[in-house]
Image 1 (spheres, helix red, strand yellow):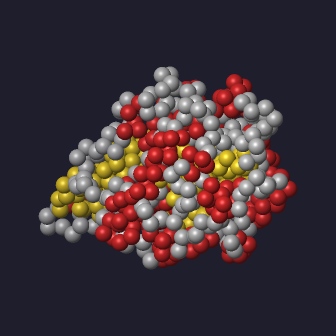
Image 2: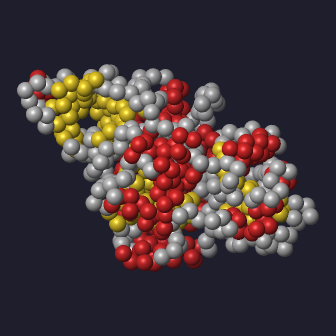
Length: 567
């Protein structure tokens, strides 16, 4: 099924895309010519600058031939007249062609919702964030709850958490719930806290924290598991609404050049919606879905085993577990105190006994285990449990993963390769966190943080992602951060701990071959060579020839999946 315009979406999704400025318009069009007196049997795109990391080596080509959904051949030189005579020929006009990029860690439903909610990313202060919420309310007067995401107090002049009071001035009666950029803290107004029954006497659940003022009153910020006190009061999306949001999200992700995404932590009701979309032939991109540990019907999902849709667009073969929080909100679990908060080591979301039970249960059911671990304590505990239960269950071949692997003890780094555990990492986290990470960790622990080069040199495989909507879904932001260790202002000048940077070939590999490997899909996608899926993108600049500092500015002209253009 071809997806070439937003006309294929339902009306709600079209409206959402138009509102978010993501209407799929102004597509660049190739010049298409047909060889005379011949039946076109395959498609041939010529006059391109093609790159693919095939079998670990960078391969270049000037033309690609594919038949239906599979690659037939790559050509170093111009294809022969005979080859062209039996093909539908498309002039690539000198554009650069890459394998379809794969984001190994994102949140598809959350990304779709983020397109329809208050955008707080980049807000310069608490007052600026509140102003954005006020403007959003004016445009959406009928909403019963105001929701948003993206604030980051570390970037504000005060560097302190916001409070309910600043929201109460404008929203005395309407509940407001705004998630921090990392999703591990939320900011509520008093109306939301009242609906949730949160007051001075409310105790935070295990693995959570209610931030309080000097008098013990809740300030409006809740950390990790405490966020459930608010979120459980928000009416859930209907199945039809989820379909619309997922379609909106996937079409927007295709526009970014993503042909496959790994959806990190999917509830059972959303899994059912995914299955319906796949069976109806409506999945514009590929999704490798991780079941959210503990979701409704979790035991039954495990009992049924991994699911692979016949369309090749949906696989449900892994489980996402979260072991700790995030560094920015000081929820990441550290072995020693935070350098900027004595007596505080972060939060473990499970006891080690419960974490071990869950990991063994999932491995025994034949699912890949993908555990969120950011702090060095969380990473060590996960690696310890993996080592024990991989041996016990004999599941090393399932390529279990640690999602983020952000802060590691140096002695734990070699364990990834030894255990065949994949480091699923997000390069833009480093460039976003560089202003606060060393404050949190100190000058010694930072040596094991965001340590891509140390991991690669130890033989580990890094599957790249973005963690959208926490970070931008644009994979060229990740490629840029991978090779420069800089932000978009090219700061710091020499790169932040630049010795941990990747080469461009390594970075592309992490977004293609290795991301596919991390989902056991390396025989189908991630490389462009005969027999592989014809998933590729065409972009406006050659990322191997331009200045690395400009890679983030790359624009995607077209996205193709299964030999069909989806954007």
